[in-house]
Image (tube, rainbow over all chains, first blue to last red; front, side, top):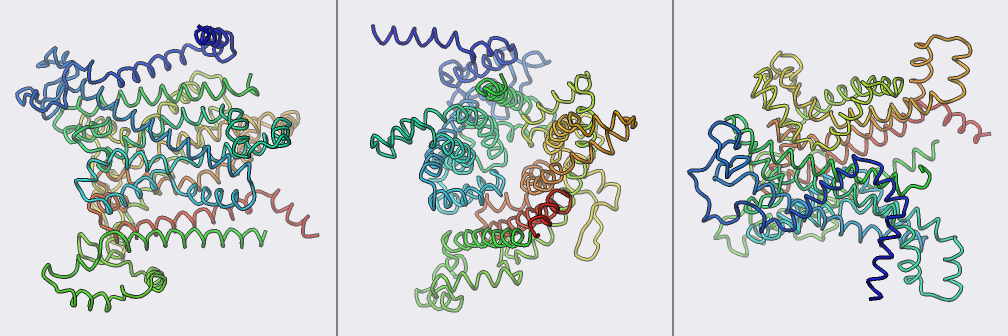
Length: 310
Length: 327
């Protein structure tokens, strides 16, 4: 019962907060939030809600290949957005593809966030040589675009792992590559904030009563620097999804057996000239809607959490 | 200022050394080059002999120094896949990428700066809002999708422009240029728009926010009080002062253009370095991969250095501080 009361109390406090107020005020943000949620829920339950399970090769019918969308002459109503070269329902592949894209996006953001926050906290709180080393590494990496680092890590993994192992591990490799190339933003932000928090009274008090530095960092400083981290994480999700789809489009991303949105666009691109536009355009449209919604949400969060702008 | 330049130069050398080491490590640990070179049934003794003639039995720091010396003299090794010297392949591909990047950068500057000035001056105009919305969508559109859309509209549906390749090129010494033929110029249009669009929106937003900032300042108010024409105020005073950060960002973005050329070149089958790099990754062609890496890192380091120096040349405040501290 106590837990329930705590929960309702939390909800009540959230509904009365400034953040919720500013959320309610902006219709664009509400729409963006609804779309993001729609994508996430459909991604989570994708295998159960898709009209055709396109991973089941046995159910595919090559007679149904290259069908246009349902409203175009020659389209079938069961294949709402048409079919691809193997007779796979485009709408189903999009939902399943968005699932792969979001999975990679979330996992790589989680990796980058954990790494960046931990290193940023340590660099800011400990200072000295530790700080210099971490920040110099960050400087060097920051002078190269993330996409180049991602491609490099992916290339190295291809060289080290045998081909069949690499196909199975491709998703993990990409998560690792995106995570390793994007932790710097978190680290820099957290370091800056930690330097400010470090001199505040509550940290000094915690130090005086003899708490372990680790405890001070993660229990006391961390909650106070989480706001901006949340913003970078949201915007980072959009960037991660875009990076993953770019890699898959270039043919160095997830294997084509479980295609992501980028893989679908790559496949569709091959048929653009023969007039089968729907195979590339619809996955592209869904990708843009997803990324745009996440970006709008991140932009709003940045403004809503920034007390200076209120 | 001198100390600053020296520090920056040292930092650049450090970055280059780190990149060269990564490239060396790729060579060293990704697959045994001996296996690629000898016949299937070569004996252990033969392998060992080859290892010794190639210097692969020496300690790794000696090998690293040899590797560095080779890099300095332009000896990048042989491509595993094609078998020709990497330096030769890259020399063939370099002009295509640099021409594409140049045109994309010019496109970004000549559209981005005027658009930024316009949206900064007419803050609440319908046209400004429209341009800002378009730029937000432009940021959310991935590069490859912009390329596909442009191909669909201008190549497939309208048939106005070619969708792949460089068109006809003219050979000027070692440099093959697409600037001198009609088909070469036509082939440049779609790829350079695709590549430059993100930078265009970036520069536009930057110029806009800088303009808004500057237009609020006292000296602009004073210029208005003196009765100067709008033109003199907006362009002679306001725009001039927004250009310092624009030069920095535009310079740094050239590096971004080289990196994102990988994607554009793949979409348009553009025979440049980026396309070469992607193929190298797919086929694990280590010499090409590591040479590309070193070359791009060199570009980046040089660009960063030039931008830093430009900063001193453009911003008089930095020069004043220097002369003050010299006293």
